[in-house]
Amino acid sequence: MNQTQSQYKTINPWHSAYWFSRMLINNDKYVAIGKESKLLTKITASLKLVAEENKGVKCLNLQKQLLHNIIEERFQKTSAKSHRVQNLLADLDKEIETQEIMNIFVLTCEHILVPLLNAISNIPSDDKEFTLSIAKAYLDTEGIKGLGDVISIWDDLGVRGCLNAERTEIVRAFTTLRVLLTNNNIPDTEKDIILSGFTQEFERRAAQKRKSRAGGSLEDVTKFILNYFNIPCAAAPDHFQQDIEVDNWVKTKDGWLIGISCKRTLRERWKQVSSADSAILSKFKIKHIYHIVTFDEDLSDDKIVLLGGLRHILFLPDSSRRLSYAQNHVGLKQYVKPISELIDSLKQHIL
Image 1 (cartoon, rainbow, N blue to C red):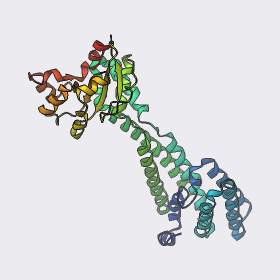
Image 2: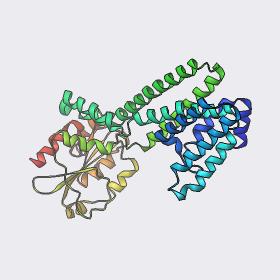
Image 3: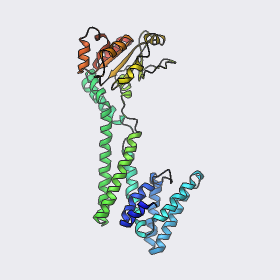
Image 4: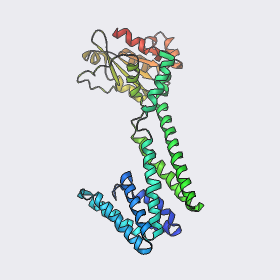
């Protein structure tokens, strides 16, 4: 137990609830038993049973020994973790000095950590759980005209859906914990400490899950669109190792390929894209590279002409100012198309 923890515990023992929740999920210094719902349930049920049968110093000593035994038994076959197991047991011994602290430990395991685990597990691990269903609804309703909308809001759909799920879970768990603390006559000051610690830990873990989510990235939207319109994807050309990031490939009726890349903006990447000249594309039987670009204000005339001359075609939002300008420019119009024409353009090559 460090100095900060000691100071907090001296001020109010209920601060230990937060430190327990942090200790029990620490997998660097300790073993993260706070990530194992069944183990936590076994620990709390056992500790409460001992408390029902015993009182005073004897009760606390029995509970601490029982806690040792359960944790050591859980990791008896993982000798590589023995040092971290002993670190955890030693620090729990120092932290749990009184019966009151032991009761707070039990409450933390049973009513903070286990509900946290359940709440976090209920948050989707993949943004696409929301994105796919909503995107399909757009295309079912609007058809090809909905392509631009689907592509432009693809990322936001998944992020917002998961955030809504997070909010639902924390409200549910927070409310349950607040009712439990009220029913057990926990004073308001202590209740606020526990609830704020719960919220802080929930947000920390939810943030970790956000980072781990694959996300409804724009790289995924092209495959979804091709599948929706029954356009089969093809394998990438063998040994094609240019800097162009192509999300999907479509084989044309003459056996050549069209690469499709969806990005918010080309920006500095356009120099990498232009590194594959027409001769390289022909070598690998690549007819065109289609770039779906959702933010196109950085597309200068020079970029459009350079890429267009290398058999790259830019698909821009139908309402784009740059699209309107380029379509009315004699030197640019052959290199740009509205996103709504993507499927028709592909079908002309594959049917």
